[in-house]
Every structure is written in C-alpha cells, then in structure tokens.
Length: 272
View 1 (spheres, rainbow, N blue to C red):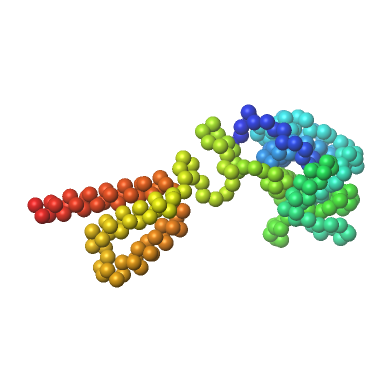
View 2 (view 1 turned 180 degrees about the horizontal axis):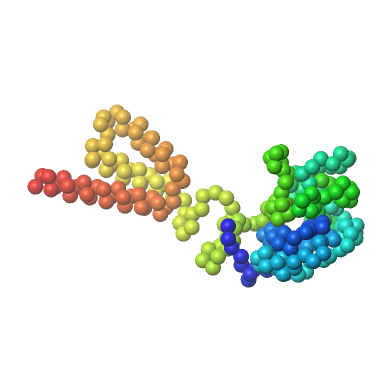
C-alpha cells in the first residue's frame, strides 16, 4: 500500500514515545522510524545503540521518516531514557516468570489512548534484534505486551513489532482509511464505496424490475404463467443482494433495452 503525502502535517498531537534498547543495525532503526511514521509516532529514543551504527543507512531506510531518525534522542542507560515517562509498555514474546500485568497489542492500544488523553507520557519499549529485552529491563516497565503469534515462530523483528504496536495505537483515533489524493478524499470507512453515484431508490429498482419482466415475457422466458411470480421474486432477491447504485440500474436498463432491440430486429428479419 504505497502512498506518502509530504504536504500533510505530521503533527497529530501527543503520542507514545518509541524506545529501542541497544539496537544493532542502522537499517533496523530506519525501518522502525518508517513504521512509526505510518501511525503517527515521531518521538524516537535509542538506548545504548551499537557503537558505529550507520546513521546514514538509518536515514535512507526510513523512506521519508528520516527526520525521526535525525531527531532521535540517545541515552546510555534505560533508566535515564525512561525517567520522564509515566507509564511504560514492554513488548516481548517470552514469559518472564515475574508478577506483571500482560496485555495484547489491541488492549495496549486502548490503554495508551486513554492515558495520553489524560495527559500522561507513555513509552513503548522494544528490545534487541536477536534476543529482545532482559528481565531487568522488563522490570522497569509497568506492563508487558505480548501478541498472539505462532508459538513455533513467535519472534518479530523491530520494524514489525513497532508497526504492530503503532497500528493498534493509531487505529482508535483514525478518522479515515488510507490516503487522500488530489482527485479523491480518503475513504471514510469500510463498506461499499459509491464514488460519483448513490444507492438506487426503491422506485428506480422497481422500474428496472418492471422493465426486465416485460422484456422477459416478450422473449418467452416464462414458460408457464403460474411460475412467473416466483421467478421474478428470485430475480428481485438476486439483485437486492448486490446493493445496486443508481448508475448501475441505468446501465442494466440499457443492457435490457439493447438486447430487446436486437431481438426485435432479428425477429423482423426472420418474418421478412
């Protein structure tokens, strides 16, 4: 799903801070920044990144979110990175053997929205590429977030984990789907889309059914008159399930009329 509109403001109001603990590769930092931008997260904190990590590579893989990488704040210790936060979510796939509340990403999304709305500063904490967070690091969080995943393949890379949590955060505040274009506004929600038209009225549908029934009768479609009501009822039910638009009704009436004219011309030719 491509689409980046750099003319749109990136200021979507307060949002969680993303904390990457001891990231090793610049491209992973960049891809995490890109995932953040997809869902309105722009505050990035790096804790003890690997010495010599490739900032240029991180900015290039951020694909439009390079400013997030540029503005990232770096701390030597996790304790320092979290000192201004009021609630911290630690993402992990492994059980930790400690007394700790556990949430799914969806539950965390609701919880983050409520806390940010109350003015709290919250952070999402993600571990290393190879082994995630240590128990000591998880102990600094208020809650553990664990996704329902394939038990045989439970590990997510950093960008995937950030994308998952970012989506759950953003979806509860999103007002549209996808991206607006110069030609069309963004979709307002799921369901049947009807650009440049509207749902057909019952009068328009009935006009189509009457037209169709007349032409079918003229063509000899109804073999016996007693079956005609039931057959038309089935036809009406078939079209009713399609939620036809006004434009589609007009098109279908044009199809029926065209077939009828062809039938009439063929009939006159045979009689001639």
